[in-house]
Length: 48
Image (tube, rainbow, N blue to C red; front, side, top):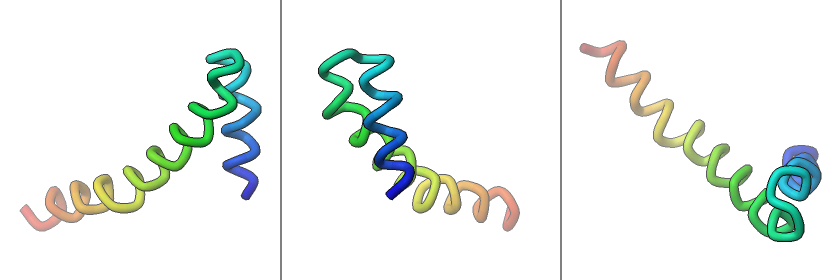
């Protein structure tokens, strides 16, 4: 919940009014990237 609010705040600071929508989308994509893709990449590097 706090990350979404941070996304709203930082999104409006960086993108203006469009950031109201882009900020939370960027936060959700970053969290999913860190959770799914980055963890798989780290596991592949450690196994090799």
